Amino acid sequence: MANGRQVVGEQDRSTAIVPIRIPSADDEEDARLTDVDEWGRSERTRTVARAIYEPVYSKWFRTEWDGLEKIPTHGGALLVANHAGAIPSDAPVIMHGIEKELERPVYGLADYFFRTIPVVGTLWARSGGVPARPANAYRLLKEQHQLALVFPEGTKGPSKSFTDRYQLRRFGRGGFVEIAMRSGVPVIPIAVVGSEEAMPVLFRLPSLARVLGVPYVPITANLLAFGPLGVVAPFPAKFKLRVLDPVSFDVPPDQERYSKSRIMDESERVRSLLQEAVYDMLRDRRSVWFG
Amino acid sequence: MVQALEDDPSMGVILGMGTTVPSVPFERAEFVRADQTYSILNRIVKATQVDTILHTHLITNSTTVPGRAMHEINVIGTLNLLAAAGAAGSSVRHIVIKSSTLVYGSAASDPNTFDEDTVRSSPARNSVERSLIEAEGLVRDFAEDNPGTRVTVLRFANVLGAHLSTPISRNLSRPLCPALFGFDPLLQFVEETDVVRALLHVTRGSVPGLYNVAGDGRLPWSEVAAICGKRLLPLSPYTVFKVRPLARVFDLPDELLDLLRYGRGVDTRRFAATGFSYDSTSAGAVRTFIRALRLRKQSGRKPLSYTYEHDVEQFFRHSPSVVRASQDS
Image (cartoon, rainbow over all chains, first blue to last red; front, side):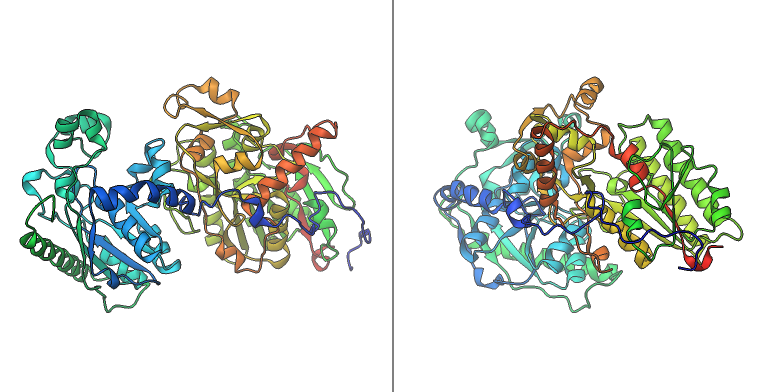
């Protein structure tokens, strides 16, 4: 060393301050006690939830799928469905059905409002709920090749009253199309029939919603029929789901911006595909309760 | 940190600077005692012609100092440090800043994972986050104005380790860990030796840039407590914000309350791409911490009385400066 100062030679200290690599029996996997993943989802919780929900799915709603084979068994895809019923049953039905039949997880994207509710938020996350943020969807679809379920109508779907049933609302600002483009995954529309009758909204209390700070407060037919139990108890409407052909966008992924008009066009196209499919299914439906 | 630097023969002269005297002996580093805002740093830089400044004195633990002092230390301290480094004829070529993932905050509308370019979803409401954001802003401006100086900012996740005391570690030391009822957020930790290794990694390799540093994996707060063999004490999520004395009893500063509600996850791939590999994952850091704590309790030794962001910090990761042989007169 060219500097004039004395440099002390080799030192043999092993305080914990000095980062010496400790050959660790500390291998990390066994330090974990649960299987909660980075999304807060726990496969064990999901298994329990599925066991509980199975009777509801197959006995109460008697769910029937059409075209389930159109959902890929691997690789990312964005599932898009119509959304209805005050406390919508379509999300758990779709997630349960795909996980049961295809044995691959589905992450349900929803308003981050859920996170702010104690207990509910935690259970929601453990059973596969993810706050609907573009960054989250991109990470799920593009980087982790997962299935993500999104309802582009948002709260406009479930909050609409029964007189507007099966009239699909506006599909947000087309964010779902943009995220599918950026992630380079197809959009798979799923038309759901039965969710409207499972929990019909008679009217809403907007002022109470404002006071409570929630998106909407519905008064449902279930509340009138079952009393307070009606908050969680849906009517046994027959659930039918139809998976439509995947919609792919012929654009390169990972672009900074996509044409806004193209996004709105594609969004509207998916919306009308779903609307048509829903009408088609309603034409063939003889009974709300028996399908 | 200084001891680790001393072990590297390629480091010429090491200069430590802090507000209290270091509590371990330095072999060859020199130490200067300074005031909190580093007002004398300018003269030191001139006199010693240092080429690297490691700034590890940003306060990330708001329980150690009151809000105004934190502003002095974090913002004014950084301002003086950068002023000294950016003065005409300055010899400083590399600045390493130890920051915290607190700059991302913790809110319901957060994305699941923050990468280095993600902007936080809501404005900072507490003084530690505000002062860190402001300090990082100063660093960003400095980097733009001084393209010749390499600037490294490391944002560390919550640090756990045998030697340091933070609100989280103190809560985990209790038989009952406070939690917010109904919330079980995902947290990420970094082990204290990984903190030192990360700082060494960027100092030796002169790696510029902005990086998140956190152990792999995320785990729910309930699991953190379970690894530590503790029970959770659920506090009401609605009143705890208002009842400040309660928050003080439980060592729950505002930023920790936010964290215990919504958690935080960061993307660490960018730092890994610079060639750094961690010794511990998040879960491993928790286990290392609790094993060290158990040893300390059962071996009857007096618990280490210094706190991380103060005394340990002062010597351990605190502004040593390195003068290379060629530049030293």
